[in-house]
Length: 431
Image 1 (cartoon, helix red, strand yellow):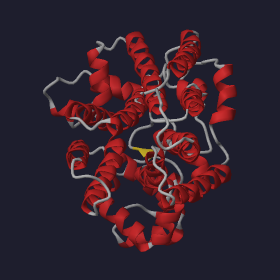
Image 2 (cartoon, one colour; image 1 turned 180 degrees about the vertical axis):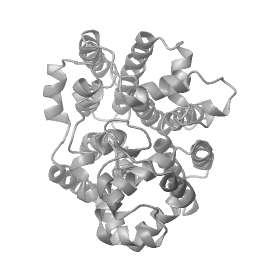
Image 3 (cartoon, helix red, strand yellow; image 1 turned 30 degrees about the horizontal axis):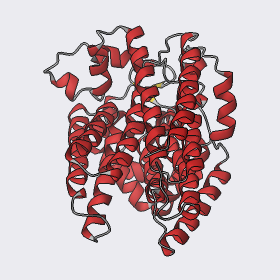
C-alpha cells in the first residue's frame, strides 16, 4: 500500500490530470471521420441480429452508441469519463506496485503525465474506437497490477471483462490478447508461472477466437487485406508477378492506376475507384491464402518491415484535431508530449534495449519487483506492432495507437520499477 504522503501528492496530481483533460475537451468540437458514420449505421442494427454481432464493424462501438441512443454529446462525455478514470486507476496501481516512496510519486507522474499528452487526450472528442480502446487497455494493465497483489476470482473476472471489451471494440485487440493468452499458457507449461494463470490465459484465447469468428462471419478482414495488396504488394514488381501466378484478375494498367492507394467500387475519398467484381471476388476467395503465401516467401521482409517503418507506427502522431474536425487546443498536453512521448525511433529502441539489459541484470541478481511486467510489455511490443503492420496498410499510425502506448508505458514504468528494484530495501515498509 502507498503511504499517506504519496496518496496526497498522487491525489493532487490526479486533480491536475482531470483538469488537463477536461479543459481542452470543453473547448473542442465533436470529431467525426469516415469510420464514425459506419459505426453510427451499424448501431441501428437490431440487438439480436448478425449485422450487429458479426457485421461490417466490430460490435463494441456500435453497441456503445446504441446504449447512449446515438447521442453524440453523451457518447464523447462517456469516453472522457472512462478514459480519465482508467488513467487515474493505473496511476494508483502503479504507485501501489512500487516500494520506494519517492518512486511511488515518480510512477504517478509518468503515468498521468503520459496520460495527458496530446496523443492520449485528442481522441476523447472523436466518434471512434480509440478513446474507449485505450481506456479499456489502460484498465486491463491496472487489473493485471491488481491481480499481482492478490490473485482472486473477482479480480480475474475484472481483467477478463476488460479484455472482452477491448476485443469487442477492435479485432486487432483480440488477436493481440490471444497471443498474450498463448504466451501465458506456454509460461505455465514451462513452470514460469503458477497453474492458477491457466484460467486467465484460457479465457483470453477464447475471447480472441470469438472475435476472430465474428470478424470472419462479417468479412471484416477483407478490406484490410485488400489495402495491403493495393497499397504495398502492388508496388513490388516481384510480388506483383507472384500475385499474377496466384490468379490476380487485374490488368497491369489497372494495377498501376491504384498502386499505393486503397480502392473501392464506388468513389470514397481518398480511395481510388476500381470497378472490378472479379478482383473483389478473388480477394474474398483467395486473398488471405495469397497474402500468407507472399509473407511466407519473403520471411526476412515479413519480420523486418514493421521495424523498418517504426517511425510511421511510433514516431508519428495523427493530426486528429484537423482530420476529424475537433479543432482541440491543448497547449499543455502538446508540451507534455515532448517530455513523455518519445517520437525518435532510435531513442525508443535504444532505451528499450538498455532497459532489457538492465532487466536481465535484475533477474540474475534476483531482484524482486513489478519490473517483470514492464519486461513482458516491452517484449510484447514487437508482436503487437507486427500484427498491426500486417493487418492493414491504411492509417498505420492510428491503428498502432495501443502498441505505441504499450511501448511508452513499458519504457516509463520499466525505468521507475527497475530503479525501485535496485534502491528499495527488500523488506522496506510501504505503508
